Image (cartoon, rainbow, N blue to C red; front, side, top):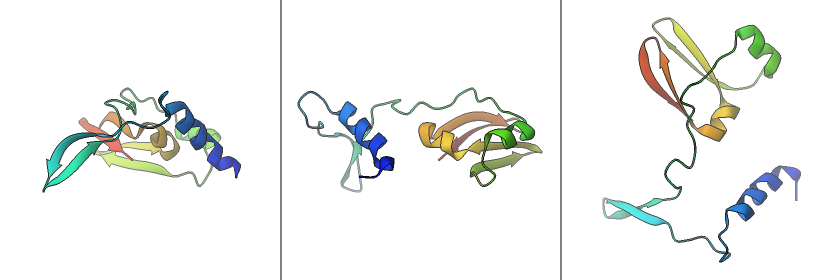
Length: 105
């Protein structure tokens, strides 16, 4: 087994209930006759609601040159959200160019 699989396995082992099996997912609605399931608990993935940013020079020191970002520009106001941080949070609530936005990944 490669090392890159170990964190996921550890997470799954911690997440299992004492019974050793996962509970059946909750049906939260029906869409065109098909059930929609809740696969995560509400707020299981915390959004970033008050993001802080660094200068471009500081980002150059912290990030790889080819590290992917989600970029956004509204009314001359720019943002770059690191995708490795969005992998853990999936949503950033922010205000860009005077507009409230939700950057998702």
